[in-house]
Length: 600
Image 1 (cartoon, rainbow, N blue to C red):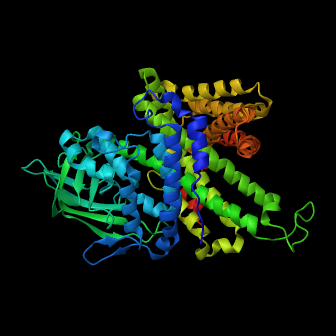
Image 2: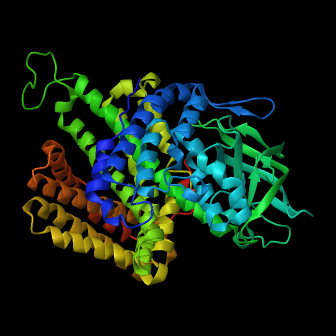
Image 3: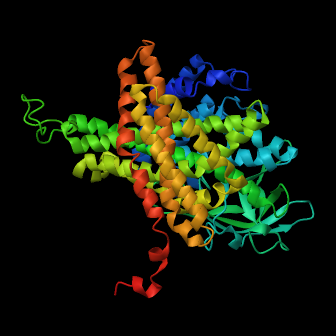
């Protein structure tokens, strides 16, 4: 049985020491997020994740969900009780708005808790996971009446939310959707159509499910310009907030998937279901992106989470399993063999995992802070800069974060050898669960194209120029400390590769858009390397200052300095090779005709 211990110490280091959120104490929500409160929340959330949710992960995967003849779905044994404990403890309310029953704490703290829950049990965490995106869409686009009717119980967790976008004939290209919304005399709409791949579309954990559904009205343009958004409750809600009749929405089937077996991924049938428009007609795409951006950050956190839980189990196995002898001679002569931990190639995989996981955690939490600052910072200039950086980094966290998270999960399975391939040990589940994060909420190729095609040129490149300036400034500031100088120098060089790749796209991407398409994946990975490098420089600088101040836990801070050096030596150089791949252009990529790919 795999084990999990939430990295509360590491999250506390990032939030309190690296990001120093106490400097924002004059902003709403941050005044309550004292170091003591942060420590308490992280410790208690970590215990909850490890003791209540994690033990259900493997058995939930083995049991899966059950669809009954009446279309109802039950989650695996124990999930309902564990979710109820989550609701009663208020874990889902941390970053939710106080006016609807939330605690109004900073998103950066909520992001840390979300990682713990996803690592402990990704399938279970997905049931409330999309609710926050649905809440964000209703907060931004919903009417006051819709907010008052739905948000209090969605915030509390009594009701969950979903996103209904994908249909059998369309995924990324939402202009192809066929679901129809026909106006009714009472101002509602009759929603008819089929949606697929709907995470947590039907289950028994909450008393109601609030579906947000994309559909087209009868006279809407047959493109993305004709999409509207509708709120469609599983059970209709009376004006006083009580539950009414069952709506005409049902689960037609649950998908049989590679992973996340404990989450009900549903085919949802809408048979003239009653729905209510959210926002303006034909403006649903903008509302959808509010949900999608929130979900993409959440999926990036899943990548970090699966990497971390796999890493923890890789470390424990490497410490316990004995195979062969150290290359420099027996490490433990009294034993018949040394632990796997002594072998450099095993250490390579473990250090790769540690460097990615801790760096990506820092990046995710910084983006949590950027979410807060984009709304709450004191000046418009600060809010704009935070929003620019957040928009730029969202596809990086989702795309690079889940690509590398999957790589870490497979490497940790490799450390277990044949035992990692055996289901009861849990390592192959981490690999299977990590794999979906590269696909849903916009496949990672789409994330790369969003980064290159939309985020780079937006506002004449304002966001990427802000990012370059941040990296250059922090590299310059670190040069005077010998412990940081090499890390800063290698990050500066990687940032130079990113600048060169950006310039190459400017010169070659517009003339031939395939050049941008062929290089987008590599560009996203360079951006990921530089982003994590920036996090490691920040963590190393914080650790060096703590050591100079004689702070306790010197071994922890020294490990940060060593891992930062490892990242600089082993990750940062890849930026140059990736830039040269980009400069290879699209000619060879696109040259062969379809028939040349035939194998017979």
